[in-house]
Length: 277
Image (cartoon, rainbow, N blue to C red; front, side):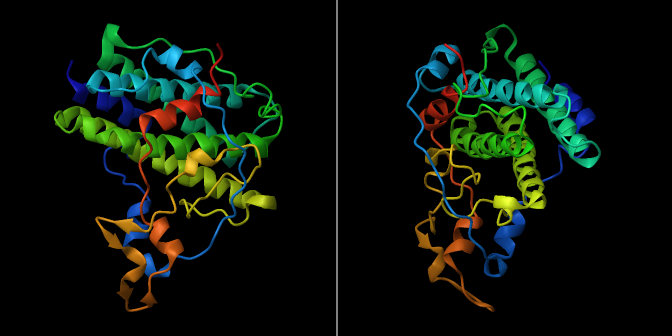
């Protein structure tokens, strides 16, 4: 399989796929200029075996394992946005519908990409329950709930890809592909956050990036999605101990500048809530 041919398919959907970077890079350049805080509201997720049943393993340990792990997450996101776009009256017409439709097309392209790379080793698509057993009962009837759950998925996806990059270090072509998808997921997360902020209400403090133990702004989304995001130490250095021309770097700025990786086990437990037995 020539993976460059598969990249062409994704670039056809997102022409900037190969050369766009995570918006976090700009945050790193402007550490001292970033401020703000988003309050945390969380309900604990149940540790679920459902995702593991669909995935067929507890955690990936090789390249195919990582790709199937990623494929299951992409199945989830592609199905979610496909159902959202298809639901009449859920997403306001105009720019909101156009944005969500574009994100849907990206996620479908990611699924097709990963399936082609994996061939007959690709896992099957699970059966999803986006109400999470009734926790999000209005997810396809209330646009704000739809966006909040979308943010949870996108933020999880960004951290999930980063958490598995180490396993792919020995295969530069596959690592490059995964990092390109990671870049697109980061842009999705940023855009969804900005869409929620534009809606007002309880999401007016949303930033395009994660701040500390940030959450989606609704009480039914869980702590583990943002566990560890309040980290202020990178490469053994306390970022808040550094100075710039604008003074000391704040705790918020330090946490905003880096996405923390999520372990495979943590992601499996988060996603498991949305997969039917």
